[in-house]
Image 1 (cartoon, rainbow, N blue to C red):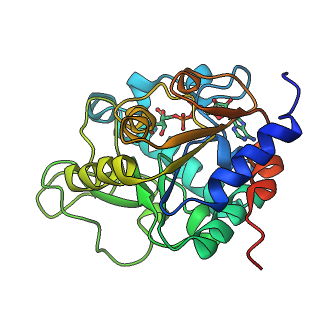
Image 2 (cartoon, protein in one colour):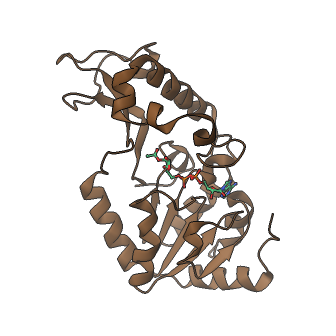
Length: 250
Ligand code: OAD
C-alpha cells in the first residue's frame, strides 16, 4: 500500500480544482467500494475475480442461462438498494455545487451519485435499476419493480427483459459517448476516481482530456493503467482524499 499523498501533491490538486472553469469527474467502481459495493478487479473481492464475465455479462451468456444471469443482477441490484453514498460521492456533489461546469461521468450502474445529490450524472455503462427487452429493446413499463420478478419477465414481443447495463461486446449509447468526449476535450481538469482504466472506451477519456490541454488528477489507492496519462496521482481512497479537495468556497 503506497503512502498517502504529500502535502504539496494535495495542495497542487486543490489549486487545480479551485481554479478550474470546467471540471469533469470520471468515476469507477472504486468510488462505491466504501459503500459496500464490490469492484470488478480487486484481487480478493472483485466480481470478475469470482464470477465469469462471459457467463454473466454478455448477451450470449444471458441467452444460454437467462435465470442465472437474472439472479446475479438481481442480487447486485438489491446490494445497491441497501448501500448508502459515502463521503466520496458527497464530495463530488459539493464540487458540482462549487463549480457550475462540473460534469460527473460514471462507469457505475448504481445510483449512489444521485442519492448523494449529484445531478445530471452520465452513466456510460447503464443503470442496473432498469431493464429492457433483449429482442425489441422496449424498456420495462410493466406494473411494479421489474426486479420483483424471480426470473426475467417476457416482453409482448416474446423476448425476455434484461438489465439495462452495457455488456461485453455491446456499444455504449453513442450520443452519451459523443458528449463525454466533448466534455473531456473541453475541460481544464479531469478528476479520475476509483477506476482501473482497463475498459475502453471509458478508459480513453483521460487521454482525451489531456489531448485537450486538461490536467488529469487520479484518486486511487493503487497505481493503475490510468496512471499513464496522469499529471497527479493522489494515493488513497475516495472517501479519504475527495473531502480534502473541496475548494474553500463556503
Ligand atoms: P475495477 O474493478 O476495474 O477497478 C476499480 C478501481 O478502484 C481499482 O483501480 C481499485 O484500485 C480502485 N479502488 C478500490 N477501492 C477504492 C476506494 N476506496 N477509493 C478509490 N479507488 C478505489 O472497476 P472499473 O474501473 O469501474 O463494466 O471497471 C470498469 C468496468 O469494468 C465496469 O464499469 C464494468 C466492468 O466490467 C461494465 O459493467 C460494462
